[in-house]
Image (cartoon, rainbow, N blue to C red):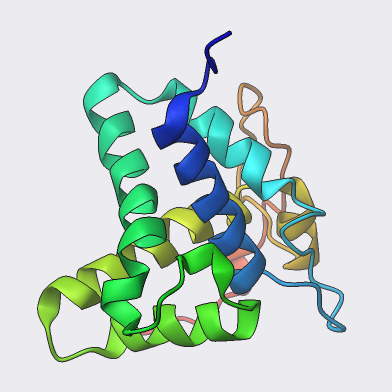
Length: 156
């Protein structure tokens, strides 16, 4: 029986797991990690909701990272084959690289996973984030502090 996900989606999901584990690891700070925020599953759901063109683009990003890392790192391993610390160094290195396409690659990974991470209620709670007005239709329930803007210093 054929795999309903297919090779490219499976490869992208392995890469998403590897990036998530590296960028949002277990920690002693009390911040939610990639497992507590269910980052891999939620990213898959996000990808499934994208229009076809954008879906292919996001999947291509993660497939490329997984399969091109042997060339990009000059080591004979896929991205997921490295330990999490090495993966973090790779992403940081790409983001600081003098060659602009490497910077785009690193920034795209960081931005995509950060967006997914910070949309989880546990992260919002950990950061003590709030809204300044009610949004009843918003499924992500932020605490509301209507007087927060009044307490900000006036800057002229």
